[in-house]
Each structure stands twice: as C-alpha cells, then as structure tokens.
Image (cartoon, rainbow, N blue to C red):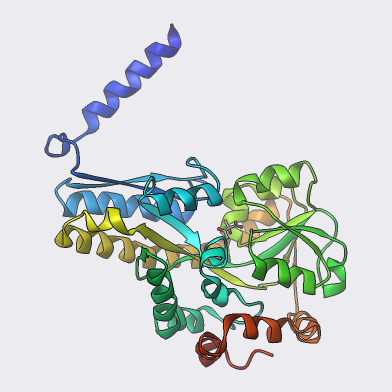
Length: 334
Ligand code: X2X
C-alpha cells in the first residue's frame, strides 16, 4: 500500500543519515520525559544537549527526548522516574514534586520575585542548593541548573483580570499542588488541580474557564485557540528541575556522567536566554492570533493575599529555615 511504501522510504532515509561511527547502539540510553509540546524551548534545548552528548561521548550515551506527555501525564512520569522505568524527568518543584518534598515548592510563592536576575541568583545560589539537597534526600538526583518555564500569566475565556475581584468565581485550572490551589483560593477563584496533559481539552470543553502559564507555553500548546484574554499578572515564577533516577545514573561511569551534566546544564542556560527572548516577542505574536492582553498592577493582589493570611500560612508550612533563604533574595514577604 502507499502507506507502507511511505514508511519504508522514511526508514531508509533515517538509516542513511546515521553517521557510521554512531552506527553501533549506545551503551547507555536514557529517556527524558517532558510535559510540554515539542516546539517548546525545553525540548528544543534538551535535543541540542542530546546532540552534544552524542558527540562528546562518541555515541556511548544516548539521550532520547519524549516531549508532550508521550510517556504519560506528570503523575505517571513521576512514578516511572521513581521506579526506574524513566531515567530523566523535567518536573516543576511546585508541581507534584511538592507532594513528596513539601519545601520544593517554595520558589513558587505568589508575587515573590521582582525580576529574573534576583531569581537566578537565588536558584543558582543558596536557595537552589538547599532545594537540590532536599531532592537528594528524597532519593532522587538532579542537575544543577533549573530550566526556565517562566513568569505565569492568567488566561481565560470570560473577562480580563484587572483586580482580584475579576477572579471571583472563575473556574481556574492549576497544576496538582497545594501552593497553587491555595493562591487561587485566596484570590477568590475556584481552582481545580489538573495535569498539563489535559489542559487544552479542559479549556476547550469549558470544564474550566481559565488557566495560568507563561507565554512560551501558551504559544507552544496553542492555548490561544481556546482562550480569549491574557492578563499579565506575573503572579508566580516556575521552572523545571532535570530529575534523575539515582540507580540508573550510578550505572553510568563518572566521566560520562560529567559530560552529560555539563551539556545539560549548558543547554539550560541557553534555554533561559531563548525564553527571555520569547517573553518579549510573544505578546505581539499572540495578540495577532486574537488573544487580548492587559497589564496588571500586582499591589492589590499581594494585599489580598496578605489579608487572607496566605504568606503567614506558607511561612509556617515551609518552616523558618527555608523561608529565611527565600526572603534573603525576595525581601520580606508578608
Ligand atoms: O502544568 C503546567 O502548567 C506546567 C507545564 O507549567 C508545569 O509543568 C508546572
């Protein structure tokens, strides 16, 4: 049939494109699972890392990137990582990781960061070191550099969000995480925890009115097709830790591990730069696709959270040590 003919043709092309020196199978094949579409910079730069690792290890280590929840939703991929069925998993510290390690969510406290330089200083510095230590204690390994997801913006199909009152009664999808639910409850919305794999269809079928994510995700996942308004709340920042199954990692010789880590961390830095560029460029692109943007003054949102006791509650939950590390960078949060 035409179909099998096309498939034969494609595999012949792929075989011809493999350089001879890599023709033998790699000694170590690690899969990375991610929850965002193929075109997102997380996947683009993970693939760049894969190419560089192949070169640097003479094909001994192969990194395979499975984007877009191909291996399952976050909850599934996280169990696979812990069991060893998956070797690498890019996961937000504020997302389901915080069910295993409550303090991993701390950088996601609402309206905490004034800008990127402050944030990178903290996460590439003492706060990040503390968080990676907590991840290590839980039995997982993690790469040094956190990958940028971005400052999060609220989209919905009902009305622009200008003040906290505009969120009242709005059905909001949030990731599966106590910190996220608590933020949107404090602001008067009705949040529901849903894995990213189901977000597009939840918006399309109006199970929820809105969601919140950075511009790079709104674009890559085409959320503008099922949302009308984008309000620049910058209400929290999020990133992905490159998590590692420890048993699998220890089966790799130290010199190869070093090379892999170097390439992964180097590409994390490149990914951060690309996201920064997209943050600027995408407002125009997404507006051209019909998304209606508005700027937001964060002050009344932060006041509402304070009145509601949000900062007090999370300070208690995270504990004095971690909270002090956070406030060292962000300034007083109350
Ligand atoms: O689930 C989300 O919204 C996402 C993709 O941003 C995270 O990984 C937290």
